[in-house]
Image (cartoon, rainbow, N blue to C red; front, side, top):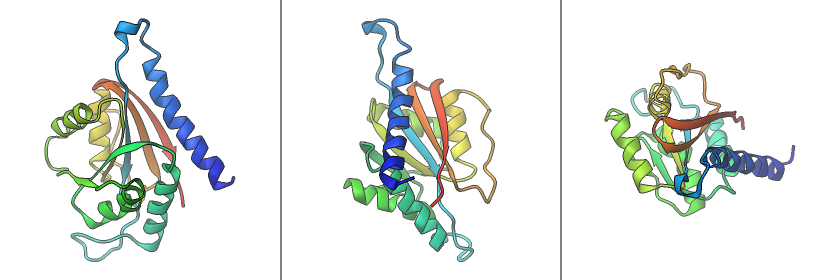
Length: 179
């Protein structure tokens, strides 16, 4: 498929995901702003240095793919953990949107972090880049479930689109993206 078609399809899917949750309200007074969080694990990382590696060439290609997939999405904020692999994963996207990637500490309370993001960016589109063990924690908080488990060390292709009215009232759509 041509890239323009893929970008349009991704935008349509993200828009429809957020719209489907908004349409669940039956009256005008019940309508609540839907915030769309796009959660992604960092792309493929190098083996060295072990404590804070950069992306591999494949990881850099995946970061560029993320940027092109979300080109039509009106992203208001990009959050990343303070590690090279995460900053490099969302760096091209943030730069293309004229945004600074905001850092968060993945060791802190996920609920507090997400509540703050939802409060600050109510009704907007936000990208959050995490890790194999933190993305599932964020998803479980938003859905008030234990459905999501740690991602395999070799899993880099998942992109989770989470339409949220309130924590616990979330619809998750999982896309796979490969450069």
